[in-house]
Length: 342
Ligand SMILES: *Cc1c(COP(=O)(O)O)cnc(C)c1O
Image (tube, rainbow, N blue to C red; front, side):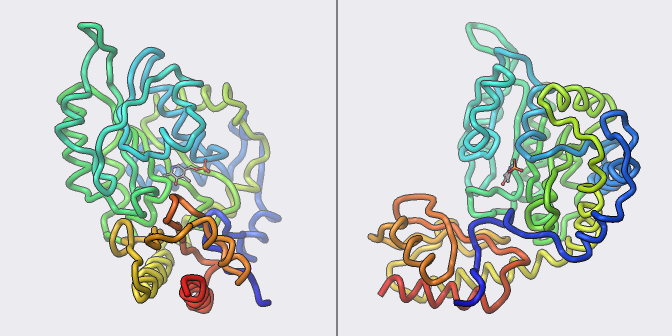
């Protein structure tokens, strides 16, 4: 069999040869002491792209989100999130375990948190109710099919938060994809939140790491919280160097992943009784539902044909495109999918 076509996630991307060279040649120092020039450069560059004063390199996106929640809210308070949000559903209840927060999931159609629900939820403490002074948005929205949350919706949520004296954190793990798909400037998205987390190890293809951005005071605190969580890393310029290449050279390429996701979606729909759960993909994620079929069994059959994917529901599979899957992989996935349904 030829090479495996791995659609499980865009996290499976391996560093390019140029990234490997950059790792070998990186100028490094002790980053916990603030001495790693390559990390400093990465942080400055990402902060500038997002229109923020400062940034902090963190080992994972989850840690970035958890640090932000820890700083923006106090134990015993609430955090408002959209339903199916990564921070809430996919980070081991870190909000509760690390920061003593109660998460309140608000309805969010395709990642768009309902404005009235946000108005009703964000509040000061009183009358038996805890304060809820933090709203977390997510763009693109992973478990709503990689949907791009429109800029004006994020701006409207920001307005509600400002009216209520609440902070906003943007989980922008795939904000790069949102910007590539919508043409909206990263800094415009950045302006809708007090802090932004972006991942380097997904579609951009860096091996490890995420960046948390915000104002200078926030990032100073983030430094301490990262240390508390065991995320202080020493000669981590070896990771910042490939991440810099990722940020500089891989952003525009993401539209190719989006085209392939669209092709996958169109191809899936050629079968009977198949639905795209969130409609045609807007970015690099496709949720496909094979009505009346067992998704786990389909995953196994596809795997035997060299196509890797995940079941995300009893009848639903998630496919994610990225630079390690080309057009041939896409056609192979479609062929295997149709064969599995027959
Ligand atoms: C992947 C992802 C994260 C962070 O994931 P890590 O694996 O911890 O880097 C955060 N939010 C969203 C929406 C994601 O898809």
